[in-house]
Image (tube, rainbow, N blue to C red; front, side, top):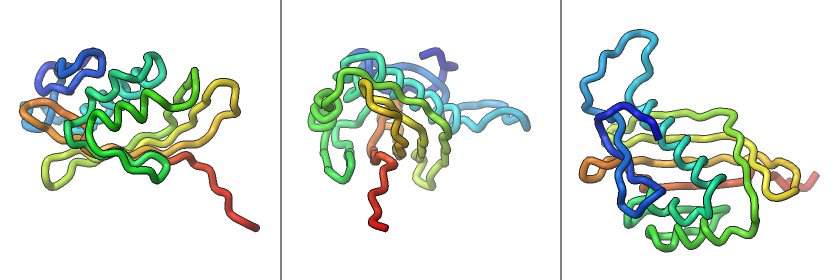
Length: 160
């Protein structure tokens, strides 16, 4: 991932390898047209996450999470990097493609970054489905890692 120097993100391509890019606390000029640094960090994470999800066997995704991270996948909870990696690597499809339509970022009062992603995904030969995913990133020992992740398909089976 090509990012500016500064703060690091846990890499999904190798266990505990760090990818460097700017983060809060970096001395960055804030001109009117320049994005906030937490937005750049969020965009970098989203790009790395979905690139790895769509183009690898997903085992490396676990390295983007902190050791004690929490994932809620369609209402089912998974605690810890190993459980999260197992869930993501064993999803029942061969191919997936995410199309991100919107992504929103917020800094939190405790120096984390909240990310909300909206989009569509297509698995194998199924029709595209809407999805929503929320991430919380935290800087731990100079590296950004996902501490919380909530995923839901945008399917509503509401009786009429």
